[in-house]
Amino acid sequence: MQRFPWILSVLLALALAAPRLATAAEGDAQFAVSPESAYGLLDSAIQGAKESIVLNIYMLTNRNITQALADKAQSGVRVTVLLEGETFGGEMLLPVKRVLEDLYLRFDQQSEGRGKFLVMTSQNKSHQRRFVFNHAKYLVVDEKKIFISTENITGSAFNNKSLSGGTRGWEIYLESKGMARALTKMFHDDADQSYGDVVPYEKAEFKVKDPGNNPLPPRKPRDVPLFPVESGKIKGGSLCASPQSLACIVKFIRDAKKELDVEHLSLPLVWVDHATGRRLPNPIVAEILSAAQRGVRVRVLLNDDNSFGEGGKDDAEDQNAPTVKFLREAAAKQKLALEAATFNHQALQVNYVHNKGMVADDIRVFIGSINGTMNSVENNREIAVSVESKDAARYYGKVFDLDWQLRAGAR
Image 1: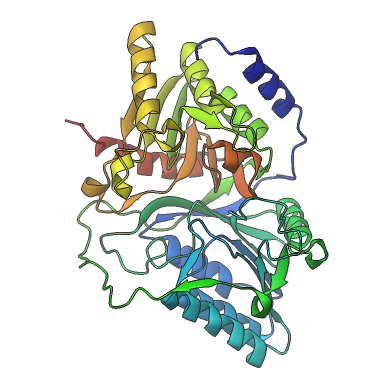
Image 2: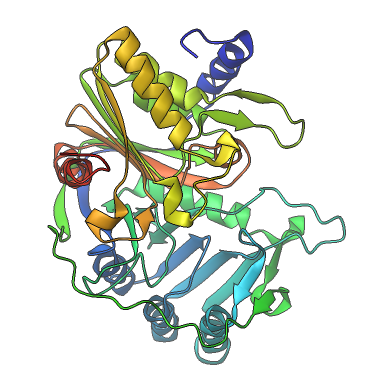
């Protein structure tokens, strides 16, 4: 891994030649974190819409948010939602289906055509689709403001009460006409029904499962430091989109000069191409190691594999533990300022870390839906944003510092 195999070098060279999406000039921004303040920021973004909202989301289960979207459409705002129809596992719980059904009915009966609900699926004749998963998590308001999240819009990630449970993630809401227009165009391209992999909600087929009487575990107020919404400025930024998001991920890491903090749900040591069976070292892990080798102080905090009850799986493709072990051994052998650790979800009183975020040099932040897997980088529709902002770096740096302080094994 210290020396790139030739195929990894070629992959990185091709990735770095990829075009960049729209960039942003200096502007206002707001920052939030899941689970404690994300709901307030998202709800504020929706309530502030005057003309239009487009939402692309992998999972939408939060009834408060769907009601806010329906209310906006009823009040005169054009609202279009694009939802992934075949989430991992292929089944939709009955309570979730009822939330979506309510949104569809309110759009259909009360919005006078201003509310549109679309689903990405493989229900065309060829059963083909442009992306393995539509895994993006973004909202565009009035074609001038964008909301980017690492989290699905669920009751746990977007919780309007500071209770235990939920997921750790980051959210940012910023004003940028350039990025907003680029995202709006991408949204309408992705939502184009002529390709055949997008259908109106009422024509989509779902595999619905009734979970029966399955109450949520008891929740209590969290007694760890919480992070409210904060405002600040960004000096600039750019979008990063999958498929082919490796270029902008690598650029963010390579631009780090002194410090790099990485917090991730999934950063396996090995990439597997499921079409060919080919296995290769994860180029993102390789770049993180290279950053440490050139003198950058690096901290990597990854989700605990056991948080999903899957810690015993042998396939390193889906595991973070081999990555943590590899980075620790490389740091010890090469005497690098590189630390890797497992996220302590119990100490932070959340279910797991779902984040896909990075902070560099106290001035740059990367936030989005892109996991560190080959599928997420090369095959899904994903969206992230990289911003230059001391305010954003200060905010998310404090969040990371708390998560790092509480990491597994910390004394």
